[in-house]
Image (cartoon, rainbow, N blue to C red):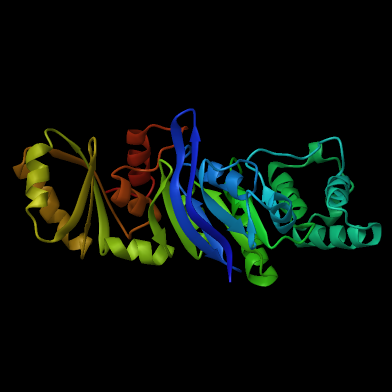
Length: 330
């Protein structure tokens, strides 16, 4: 049975299309990722599926209930962890959970049992009596996940659950999410712009950009589409002749150019690097940096959209260069 069914779902704001005729399904028990940059339409999609926004067109069902005609039934069937914190810092962790459980009409004895259960799940038993304003960022995210589970939802929406967290805390949250899915059987829809997060957690991902899906499938299958190795070259000089030489090489499966960075896929990339450098010299360009690696979801995004993931914290050129240098460019 499908936990979610979406048919040509569309949302427009003042003439701007934020979500453009999306159609997809999510199976019960699946961990499905919406992967894309800020502004791609991920949060808008989640807000429609969780009944916070009405679609402009199209339809969707969650846990068998229509998101427009059966809002109350949908809301009883889902849990949501929002991108922005929604906890009361002046209450303790336990009191936040107590209040949320009361809103769902859960009886006193059952509330106590479930609060103990979810606090144990996210390992916050020893912090339950502390004010939330004194929690770390990671503890707050874990408490929000616990709150989203207190009423035992069939579907859990996680909107950028690790945004702003340090690497170690982010990895801990990943472990909790995967445990919920595998051991608890909770269907999870995860939005993220962290490629490694989607790769680690999701059985299937949809790469989303400008309100549409550029590609959808298992991370491994999407990476297999590229084939071979990924070689990136950062160059100085006129790239036109170099690009023509590359495109004339039968062993180069694909090439994308972002300003001064060439990203190519090919078999046995390590053996082709000397040849690439020779081609660059013949074309009169200087190779500043070379990087060889296996395909990633970042490369998949580049393949389908012609650019790397947008990020408000850094420019496109600098992200491309730091990605190469940070992995030992030679």
